[in-house]
Image 1 (cartoon, chains in turn blue, orange):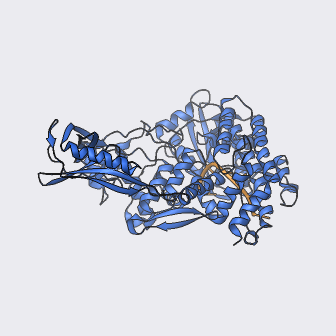
Image 2 (tube, chains in turn cyan, yellow; image 1 turned 90 degrees about the vertical axis):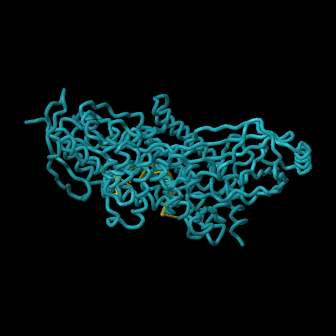
Image 3 (cartoon, protein in one colour; image 1 turned 30 degrees about the vertical axis):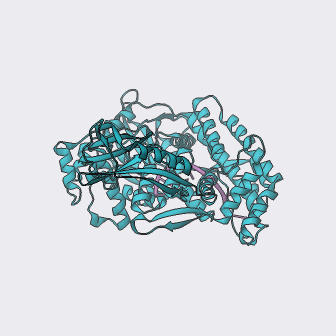
Length: 624
DNA sequence: GCAAGGTC
């Protein structure tokens, strides 16, 4: 009998795609008992040495199999002081709804010589792989464990992954295990502490859960931080000089090199000197080609940011819609950090698929007729998924209105990536007037290229400048002083918040939208519309509770050395660095868990000791 | 009734 090999992917869609490639398209599908999504695919495949021709069962899990929780006697909120959760025993169990999936793996492992793990090649994927391994070993302790390393589901790539397996990376799996334990202990301890303490202080908090999480709190911190900057803003008056010239029937405005100053007398004096000089001298006339770069291949974070901005959908809605489009097979996997296309992907074929479209079909044809360019490469690669792109064309009549918007964006972005940059001719003119320098810039757009399909970018020709010659003198038509006021920053918008979270390592591409939704659900922030029509944006404004929490925690640690407020992203960043140390093998999981718990325990003890600060902040903001 | 991370 041929040897049997069990393959397990992270999700059903990957299991199916891999089975299709390995089997050459002919496989048998079997449902499993107790779960409607997971299927077993059976076929033969030659893995090469040392396995040879094998009969394969390809199946999947659905994300993590297990969850970590406190032992039963610690689950009740009154069962122990919240601080005890830093040490309380925890146990890892297969989630209730995943029991049939785990059982399927144990059963299939029983008759298998080897297990090939096909989870995503990222940290979480390594941990999920370890969960799968544990189940397989429980079914068959002698099973040999291998890991397929693949970063997309292109055919040749998948075949190579099957024939060149590697080992599971225990370090990465351990790093995730550490994160899971820390998030649980710290989240539960602080949540219980602050909920129980604050509920008693203010009537409106009576029935509320006031949660703390290492991601949701820094997210709240960003919103509050901006809010306070807006509130505390004091406008300042400034003055500047503007110079205007009328020539050849055109008006040219020259901008001051110093932009503006906050000293009126000084500006007046500078203008006087200009007027005394009477004539301005052209010191530079530069004509140079300018270009506006086509966008980078699309990542999740970018989809959420651009989507919020141009499609007027919040990031969670965008992700839901993108997932629906993915499940229906219209776009690629929407959770990716990668902004570079793998050479193995046949991009032109994907462009051709868009030919039938009424809006951008002709544009796609023009690309294939010679205008195609290889996309730019960004600097991110998660080694698991390609940038988000359309996989086939779909008629607009098949989509609801949100799906239409998101699909259109993904397609236009993809076609833009495969286009040439926009090209133009720029003119920079610099003049010396008295002691001061001024400049005027002109732009003529010569080739729109990607702008024709990527309607979200704007790049317009400016008014054309009249001719100037270097060294020539002219008398400006007008030279004035003008007054202005600095304006307050505006409240944080969702795309800005996602940008901040991304830059500070708060959450992952898949979870950022959830953290924002969480702080809305907890009533730490609310969303207010600003403006109307096309310029309408949604702004995030902290509630009184949100402000009170941040101010309270800032006060708790104020004046203490080395204690960083929980509302800031630094503690989370620190945790991230320690996880990297586990991955590098320089620290063990236990060391990191102990160290990080010590760090958070210190803040916890301060918080308990100075809980009055937190209570006072809540009274201050919520008792009126 | 707590977290964050996978995925449906």
